[in-house]
Length: 290
Image (cartoon, helix red, strand yellow):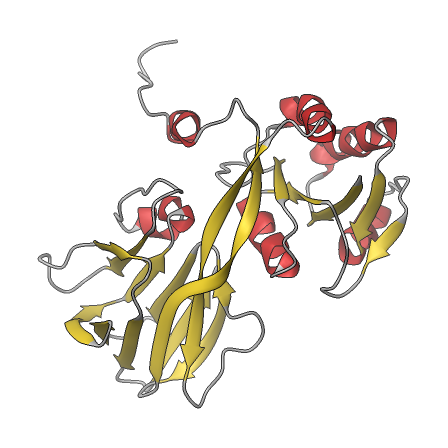
């Protein structure tokens, strides 16, 4: 099995976890390829694992991609994979993880299951950003969310919003988060957006610090096209796609809709979204119990 390893910098106390991962892959006789930037970091940490080659650029042939880190690392890995139809397994060596939900104590068992082909693959919706006369540089897709935000600490922005060409409202707020079901547990949740089951064919619009308390998050079908035009006193605003941000001038029209491909996410058979909510958000836990 051809395995690609993608990761980012980690603290020294995580080194043994990463070494266990590579040792297990070697034991399973995997064909291992490492992202070149991650390999450079491993060398700086004084560790050189056994591997078959380095991954350069965004075109490669793999059976599975392993994302080693947290959800941010997973999002960057998904951007590298793009439309190549390679499933991604998230190994969590960070903190809270919804995408990277395989804990350090599960690595060996999970890899054994992977090589026995005992796992499930979930297809996750992405959003695509279209812009007129001012393109978003680089990868214009988002697995979690597309956020329209004010650029600095100045006054709020106005976001004129249409759904399938029909006027919805003009959000007067610090911003607007347009999230997939995957992204409903990320930025959108932090601004009081609803949690959406990953298999839902939905998108949620969640305003950031709206001027009116009557403006609430709205769930719409993911078949809709969202059109946006922003007004701002300083004539600029910020667009963020999964944390990759760029400054845009006001007046241009933005269109957001569902991408024409999905990101494949590997999950263990004994892992469910509801278990993740209980574990990560401590649903049902009584803090008084010890």
